[in-house]
Amino acid sequence: MTEARQSIRVGLLGCGTVGGGVIRLIERNRESITARVGAPVEVAHVLVRDASRERVSECKPEWVTTDPEVVFGDDSVDVYVEVMGGEEPAKSYVERAMSLGRGVVSANKYLLALHGPALLQKAADNNVDLAFEASVGGGIPVIRTLREALTSDSVDSVHAILNGTCNYILTRMRNEGIAFEPILKDAQNLGYAEAEPSLDVDGHDAAQKLVVLSMLAFGASVNVEDVHVEGIRDVDDIDFAFAERFGLTIKHLAIGHERGDKIELRVHPALISKESVLGNVNDVLNGAYIQGRALGPCLIVGRGAGEMPTAVSVVSDLVDVARGKISGRPGLATKVIRPVPRALVPMSEVETKYYLRFEVADESGVLGMITGALGDEGVSISQVMQEGRGANGESVPVLIITHPAAQGAIDRALAKISQSGSMKKAPRLIRIEDL
Ligand code: NAP
Ligand code: HSE
Image (cartoon, rainbow, N blue to C red; front, side, top):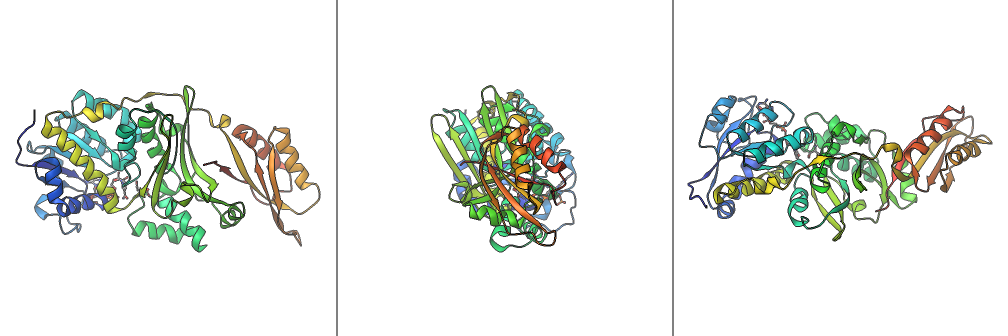
């Protein structure tokens, strides 16, 4: 039954980059939001850590509190929006809101990756919504697409750029040839990076998002610790230069692939064609390239981080949750997400092509040793390239592109090669994805 309401009152938990954007967007689009919800959306309280910090000008001082009892003790609050981040107290607050029979919107992929299945169960038990579009892909509607638009299909694979900070850094490294650290500083100043930016550059943020996506794409409840994760710290200028010659570019990808009753989940830098759809997703943009079994390919691209793009996803969720509340049918969209535990393909069995770069002493027999070690493990080579002539004991780069091979075989071959006295540095491996 549809409830006639004066307004939908919001308890905002956190008012940093995203929370400030949420307040501004509610204010900026007041009329259209009211029309879509069927009642005005009003901020009732804003919970923060430090009440003295400066907030966006649209945030009224009387909303701001550091006391959670003020926010949860107010029976007039209809929906809680968690944009604090981290595990605790965010988890306790989300659970408390649902126990009170209130719907929750969260942008917190860390919370969802660690506790998504349990929180979804709690939402179902309390007949409320838990909406989390902003937790993956910032402003791009990837959760909604999987949950609603593709609900009649099943997903074979997802290849995605899910960390705006990494994509921004890689794009500028490639285009401007500048070092990693100053670009990371810019990403922080632009509000893209996490409070702890190692979560971005070491790949954990993308892994958390992949786990959240897998709940929808593969109905999977997965331990984030079990996902293979590599970040972008080791990506080198020289690899961009070589990639260019092969018509490739380097992107930080999150990959999910259903393989029979198991799923493959991995996050790492990958070489992909410059001409591919994800090869052209640059700067802070995120992209999710989904292969539906009936649909075929589907691409969603947009800004993956920052104040307003993320606020768009949060406020869209808020509109949905508010509508559910007003219509007297809350919780329906959330109940359809029922992840169950699923086994992962061990990384040693994952097969891709590889780009291998060796810095070697320029002496006879080295190339033979490398190709021999790969051959002994059944790894077939597609291309070999050696650059220059190492004078005075300097190293020379040797590049090898392989045909598809299992990671276990490559690891064994590289261990053998590394033991030889001819390597000047540890070999560099980047997986190649055909997209
Ligand atoms: P942020 O700028 O660091 O803001 C966090 C806010 O939460 C601050 O207002 C902080 O209060 C408040 N807070 C933190 N711990 C608290 C506690 N224990 N009690 C009360 N308030 C607390 O973070 P953000 O960038 O807005 O990110 C928020 C969430 O959105 C995170 O889960 C993040 O992963 C996610 N997200 C962010 C982006 C993005 O582009 N930034 C995009 C998608 C998703 P004070 O202001 O007083 O310190
Ligand atoms: N730090 C995250 C990123 C924010 O760079 O993608 C969006 O979740």
